[in-house]
Image 1 (cartoon, one colour):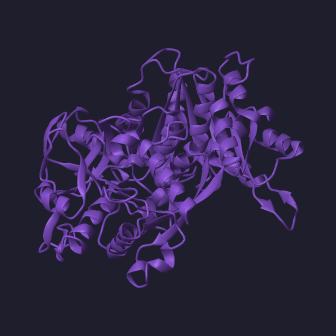
Image 2 (spheres, rainbow, N blue to C red):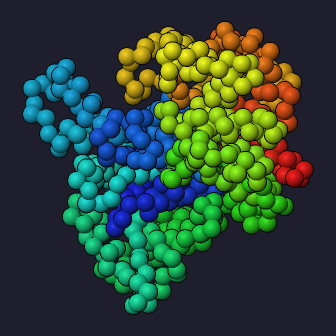
Image 3 (cartoon, helix red, strand yellow):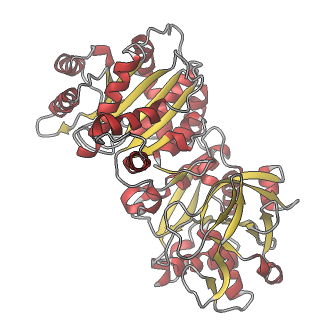
Length: 545
């Protein structure tokens, strides 16, 4: 780690879901616009080792890094805004921290000491914050949860100690709060923010900047009041207004002077303005699209759209690349098990079936896939969506009525079955039905070889790609010839040719299903080629309707 590396700690108060992740990602992108090198990290106080076994209703989507970490969805924001790939060393949880501490205690590493939260747990957190850093100018660390949560106390103590150890000239605390508007009083209320800051001060942390979420501009006299009672410079009370698009946030924060005040805190000259031209281009495209296209996403977590956060953003990116607005029609797959799919799908120009786990809603997804195949509607299947596309073809075209996946039915024709072993950079991975659910999937980026002339090869513009995976089950390669006879081709495989990664239907305008998750690497300024091609196919279909 360079002696010049500076640390910015982002905490949240008043209520959860204020957008600390977006704030962190936006600040990182603005600092990049000033030419600085950034790194982003998430410290999650929950006791799970990672979110891999958590329900999407509990935690939203699970984001996967290139090196196979299952992480919080905020790391998706970090990558989409900064373009900097996150690693396993950029995500920590209380579960991982305590696991490390207990392992050390069992080995006798503490030489008989009584193990305590301070210093043993806090030291482990500090080690995480300071590890795996090279020449970054800024490391931004977001602390999950809300100030006052009992789970978060060791993290607040740890970041207080980091600032003490490094010196306040290398550390900064930013606190995200809420200024609620009370219609009957006709004013914004500052008291919740004051109480939140005082709670933070109880832990020995004096915030250097407040990022105040608000529905309307904050009057200067209210900023002055907040600054006085929270012991913060007035210019460091930053308004965080609601905006129409999350990609407008970096521009909005920069206009409020956030980056200038950060530079001022660290004594960095900042006379010039940051280069935010790529964000201005994105916003202008979103404001003035050449048209609109409607795409259906058929899943079972549609009541909580955070479960499909990366899917949502990747479709937006595909629209930006095509200068079109993508309007998503969210459809609960269970409805299609009870009603005619045409009632819900006859007004869309494309259909996407995303990944998921568990049997609930799968038959509805299969109905959506059949509708897309038979009505020549552009279709993209991802992970489980790919597996169900294969099952649908085997059942309804090849005539194998009991075709299925052993994930749901051990007695089916095992078109999709458990991957028992595969090669990684660390050696051979082996799994059985009895393996733990957590961390036992094929995780992270793996290479894939594309068939020349295929839709995917044309979309990517090459024949060798690397995409991120998160799955336990795989299309059984022995069914390749039967699939081909049924009109479906395997157009992407692992380099050894044993693991099918992509299937297409050549006799279809655009029908592609992939085992990996292309949405995880998509960015607004560097969209996934597959989503760009998919949205283009949807646009072409809409012109025919």
